[in-house]
Image (spheres, rainbow, N blue to C red):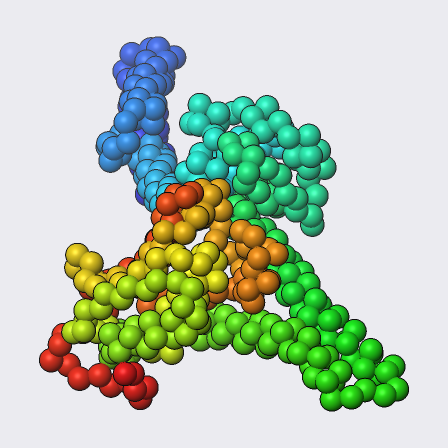
Length: 440
């Protein structure tokens, strides 16, 4: 038996003995009644103090004597354990809320009756939920019929996609899982970019198939004609070959551009430190000469080149990007157009620009010019031998060199395509070119 309970028993025995002694001297029943009354009053007084301690602020147990000391000690120990447990639970809850709050997905805890118990910050920006929405039914705030049916069914094996309640152009993926005590955890992620990539992939495959099918159809058609002809002289054969050559060259250019894009997409870009020093001035001089040959005197060229301006990068990639811009200017501007080719310093960096005074480009086309197979004039592009991948290659090359492409144009006033390279890519004049390619 605990000491405190023995103390309480001795307290009772002592009261009986005192009552018996008083009763022997005076009246027996009266003494016994007085003794028991005194003990009960003492018990009631200690119980009252014990009750005040229990219901009062958390504090160390006070000395009450007897069994109350043991009870208060046990309660105090249980309180301490409970406080530690609550502290641990609060810390775990805080960590969970902090971690879920930093997740890119919206997280909403839903009670069994469909009301919102808690949500993270992402849910506020993605679903438009506000702190005052706690306790509201989730379907009262997101009224999409498919979403309402999904919540009612509570099928944890399925997921669904709905337009964002804040922006219908965005697509949200919704999942539901069991959580806690018969609660549900709603997870919502933004899959707009993924859906856009999948659409671009489907369009890309369809465009590649179409672009390859056209020259292949021409080549096969002429081959069948050649096969069916019983007797052909050299002039006829040459005529057929002349007709086959453009389609074969077009298909060859398309395959080369596709391989180039695939390499740019998959290969890791070279860092500034590991890149070679490219003699851009010599490269641009060669490009100017090639542009004049490609034009055949139909355009007027002006080249403005900073001879001492070099950058670090991959020379073949930079040459491909610059040549694509120049060949586009030759292909898509009419005869007599003035084409200006610039390689100069640009603030704290460098820029390569192609400026012309041609017909210009309509504003609605400019944001999409770097998309693969996008053409302003499809018929004219194919007629001039374009594959629709030139500006996509330019964009990828510049991305790998930490550079950007700016396009400005006004209808009837010409167009400007500028590649801006950051200062980190510049190389001083005292540094000798390390490229294996020699430029004039």
